Length: 247
Image (tube, rainbow, N blue to C red):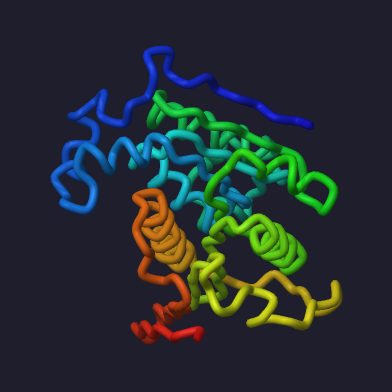
């Protein structure tokens, strides 16, 4: 297994060691000192470090999630730079997970951030995700989405799902208490011939990735997230937001 790790701060990450860093969110009644400790004790695996993964990884790191895994087997290509804000031209041809780890560690060196450059599949999914409490689907392909849905269903772990296309995106949370799962919404697997990478504007990735980050933080705080059992759809071109009750 190809895994690169950066060690946790030797003094221990309590979540409030640097009150200046977290001052603005410590003021929030939903967080405060105890909530910051909860964030520091939470482990999150983000599958996909592309358009969705880039903004949500930034915000999870900035908020102080104690342990984060970045799982992505791809390398940075020129077409990524239009929307994947973790990367710059000097990162081209380098592994996304490792370059993302470097940027995020520079942002918040008190966290344990791991880069996993192995492709997620049926053989390794249980091993790679076993130590993480919350799983975030920031992928762009159906096989991995089905794989994550099956894994989190069998392990009763929450799955924060996001998807984008063009100016539109969607986000929801699948959890043990959810009435429906990803396979229930999209039951027919697509063939390889049907899967064509969609066009997308970078801002769409930023919006949906940020929403995924906010829902992940709510889970980390031990709260019932707003999108549990609900599907939020966003159309940035028409300026419309709709929430559907999946029950």
